[in-house]
Image (cartoon, rainbow, N blue to C red; front, side, top):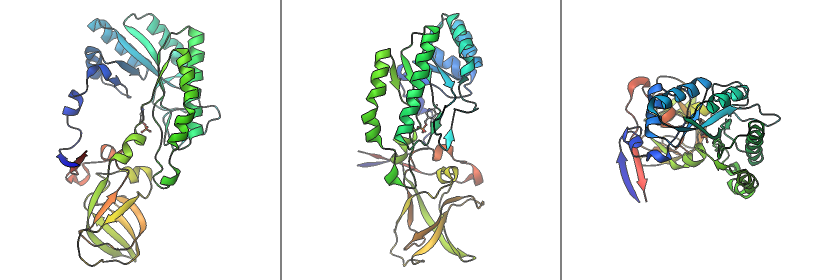
Length: 326
Ligand SMILES: Cc1ncc(COP(=O)(O)O)c(C=O)c1O
């Protein structure tokens, strides 16, 4: 395995290396310039978030004399289905078209030869830990699409069923049961195939979380009004996941120095360098031994970590990125 040091991850080079033919362009609040660029590049499919966006795409495609494939992202009501802690739909949210707007969107697409409707896009919830619920959710999407295809005689070939499979940060033994999910998925894929649809998933956290670790060097270990704190070099401006989730992030201690420990089986709160009491990565964790110079290693830090952090708070340096290559 090789170690490769790398500058901050959101450098522009990342985008230019993606082959245009495989780009699916989605997300709320797309800029006019981004839409123009996407149409010009001929991305494989554009996910449409609103009627306004659809009209902008139509105008751009006409202007550039290009044809563009789209998926309509739809927000639907979730009849009887249990939600999760993070809902992007199934209730009023800024994401996707309201199902009520679908007839208007379809009329506009029918009147616009530049726009080809490939299918539909859904992403209604994240943090899904329950296989039954996730399969029911996807089945609900497919039933909806089947109804729309019948009602409006649509010929589509692609359904993006979003991401949403969660990570159980606190009880890893109760992770989403991937094996069971895959065993039962063929019911849905076979149904989709029978309709001529390809199913596409866009999982985020479930794929990426385990790929990253966030490591803080311990700068100080101190007792304050009867409680122990370890101050690490870094904090939620690098790694906001625990603050965003309001949880104690799983971690382990890597003793680096031969120094004697400053504590002995104490409850310790792990904090960063920011001047806010909210800069906490884990509270009151029992730690057997710790001293300045040791490392705190937070696992499951590969998703919604650096990228969602308030990076310029106190203007500290960004973390160093180290890539492990096999
Ligand atoms: C449209 C869309 N698809 C997929 C994802 C990935 O979600 P997750 O990380 O829960 O799989 C997100 C995350 O916000 C999203 O907004």
